[in-house]
Image (cartoon, rainbow over all chains, first blue to last red; front, side, top):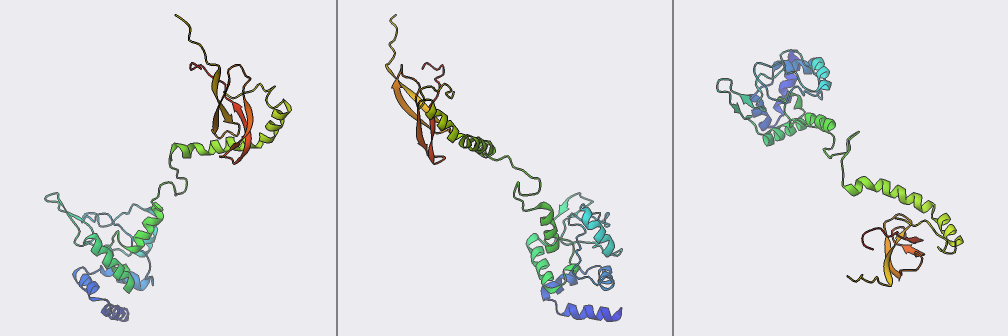
Length: 197
Length: 60
């Protein structure tokens, strides 16, 4: 255990100052390191809860069911962040909300930096976490209406009617040689009775 | 009141039978039989049959 801690310390020394300062201010819960040692995974997503972290509900039951099992498998008890500087906090006395310590731009910067250094698992849950973002992108699709599976858009009226129109035209053109033949047969329209309305 | 005299010729609409909505307007004597001819339809880009549209109510 001690050797692994040393490894962590050595690794931490290589981190950029910005990340070191962040971790000094907001150290990750110790259980996260245990997870890293026991479950070898550096790339396991830690997408517990990007919604607001309220002190009473630290267990963080997340809305996406897919991540539930991975989190349950990987996160030992006590590895949740008691205070998330990336989430807004509610003051229960006044009932007012206070914004996150780090704004979204700073969160994104820190997360990107952490990813670069391989310390993404040590960051608190954030919507700017690249893994969370990838997951959300997967869930939400391209955000272009009608591109998802089974999605449809209403479209312009001409777009809605074009299919039927083209089909009608195709059928009409298929019968055109026969129609012209008949028309010629009947004296170039002399005996023609059927005129369009 | 004297009845208004009808003109000798009328303007008629020849619609493409390719169902493209393309039409040509021609004039013919009122008493002539309905017009029909082969003409070029630019939508389908070929010669197709054009038939005179039946004249509806609308004062025609």
